[in-house]
Amino acid sequence: MQAMVLNKLRTPLEWTELPDRQPGPGQIRVKVAACGVCRTDLHVVDGELPDPFVPIIPGHEIVGRVDVIGPGVTGLTLGERVGIPWLGHTCGSCPYCRMQRENLCDHPIFTGYTRDGGFATATIADARFAFPLGEVGDDISLAPLLCAGLIGWRSLVIAGDGKKLGLYGFGAAAHIVAQVARWQGRSVYGFTRPGDKATQAFARSLGAVWAGGSDEMPPEPLDAAIIFATVGDLVPLALKAVRKGGRVVCAGIHMSDIPSFPYSLLWEERQLLSVANLTRQDGIDFLGKVPEMGIVTHTTTYPLRNANEALADLRAGRFDGAAVLVP
Ligand SMILES: [Zn+2]
Ligand SMILES: [Zn+2]
Image 1 (cartoon, rainbow, N blue to C red):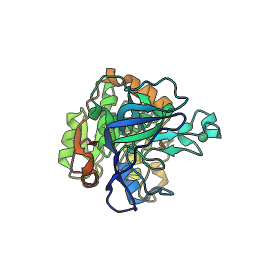
Image 2 (image 1 turned 90 degrees about the horizontal axis):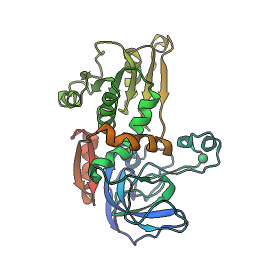
Image 3 (image 1 turned 180 degrees about the vertical axis):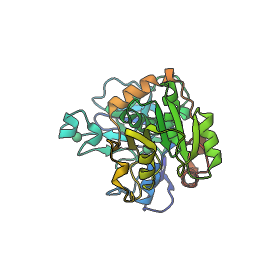
Image 4 (image 1 turned 60 degrees about the vertical axis):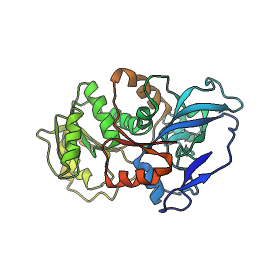
């Protein structure tokens, strides 16, 4: 197998020839067809997550086909198309696993962070954490759903069912959530970097009723806002934009410090929450509805060898939607 490996934090990934791997008990080997590039991959490369683990193969938006089945695996067949998400394994016995909150597991394994991921021609996964994807939709279009879509979905559920929804940071996740929210009959307000007219036009093209800079106030108070950008300064701005009792959900795994702000922004039962990881139930709920929601992902594809270019373009905001690597 070949892979793009992070050998040292804050250095480029390196194209590497590796021996083929065999799945252990409960595991499958998946031949990778496409792997999305997520902002979390930048945090992995930059060493911004706790206890960074190197060498590591990043990538946790994997679409591929089962090509070897390990001992004891049931319910999957050779050649079946599956999606491998960020949540790679949970312990099943900690208090969080036992209260159906496996996204908060005390002993998790995360794909592309603490276990090798999908910037490769093949990957090993825990079969219980692989989602059967069926045959509707092409591999590249489906890849961003495995994290941008799933974390976006969980954030949307946690934001509540308010009709007026603000999305701060209009990248891969927001461009999917905007389509889900519209399908649910909500109004989407898109917030971008100030002056980023191109992304504001992109938000409107996906049905946003309003799009503007994050330094602007929406034309009417929002019921909820989801912050996908990694910028802590957006928290007080979003609190200011939501109505009494409104919710602000921080969806990123990493964010710069939140500046202090007057209590009046939180007063009147506004709520500030964060979303961490996903549960397998999120995957079943979201991926099961994808065909009827008619989501169209906007993707820019790169050969696997060009993963560093994809990461650099993501960092610089050089494309709308999501980047996807193809082996
Ligand atoms: Zn991700
Ligand atoms: Zn656990």
